Length: 342
Ligand code: DP6
Image (cartoon, rainbow, N blue to C red; front, top):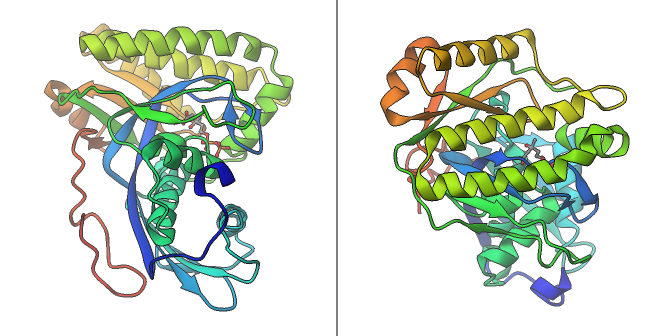
């Protein structure tokens, strides 16, 4: 950490403010080789979610840390706060220095989108603005990774690859944006259930690494898939992109099922969505899915099939990953001020 920000020092500004988009991995990060630094077993590749993400404001505070999530003042013992406070501890210029954090997600928490990805990326960027570190994106990605692995990718928009890296200190484990755009690509977020998961992704991947024998095959599968996805992006080959992403997600879930005790994030409705997508595909509609550590499904589609997805999955929220404008996507901040895009 010192390698990135130098010795701890007081902030140079009164406040820091930033936005980061959420992301969905097409080749998943599943399993760590270092639990403290969030160093992954495999490289991963994601697509950002356009205007859906987290907006964060950070200021100094007297006496204690104060944390607002979607305008609600969370106590220090809330799970969200304790994880965030542990992250903030890395940057305190002195032990009795405190922060006021206001953070908003503009997607429903129940949508099963990884709020820790956009959350810690927005936090790293806001800290950078607050302290005046002037970090480049690679160093921001490393800092965001210390909060949550998938946050390393949310520092960027579009297609993003997070390199596994080899170094023990993690200095070569960061994400970079792929120089590619695909304006016709869409991602539909389908909320099957908003109920809390029995085990979070951190606990799920730890159990998988420790107990699944199938997991041994995962890093090699991920390496093959990421190469296929890179090529599909280069060639705008939608079938290849979708089929590889779907297979990658199912293989990740196979390692979870093989864990002791088994982890199954799917609900009956999740499986029904899989069947429906497979049926539509057999009927000639090119739709593919991906799924993270939860019951909700993300459908990959092309713009020309938006109408079919809207009629077959009426609750789906269709996102254009290559629209980065977030004007008017945020409600008023906790302090009552209206925020606009920058
Ligand atoms: C299934 O990034 O939430 O969404 O590093 O412990 O915070 P931590 O885990 P997290 O894991 C995300 C797992 C995933 C796949 C992915 O986003 O690549």
